[in-house]
Image (tube, rainbow, N blue to C red; front, side):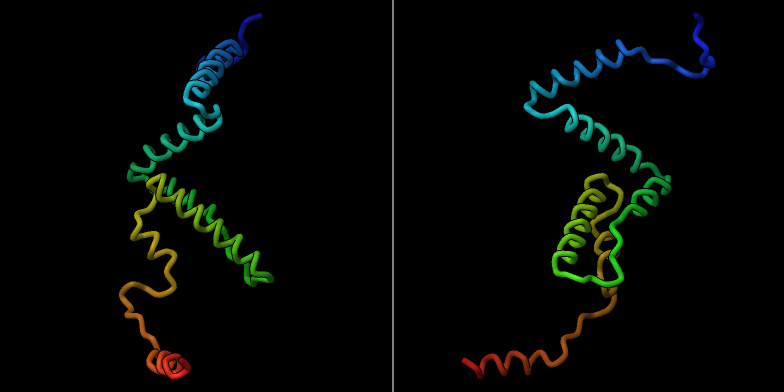
Length: 133
């Protein structure tokens, strides 16, 4: 029976997939890791290469997957889970080269960098602590 696929499509045989996967499994065994870890590494490398292109659509697509802060936290554990997810997401952005550390700082900062930090009643807080000794 002839192949019914159009000429523009390429059918890969199971034998080809099996050969690649068995080679990947052997590489993983030699390196003392898993095949999935090797696949993750390769996927991240591909994204890193493509992220260096001037096309911003990849960056926007990834940033849309950022953890969303709930309107209200009900428990401290919820806050901790959100903060952990945010840190992990930020690390992925840096690892993939999708944002610079300065851009990440601007994105996560409550106050803009151009605005000076002011501490109100700083002296009175420390004065009362010194008196209590």
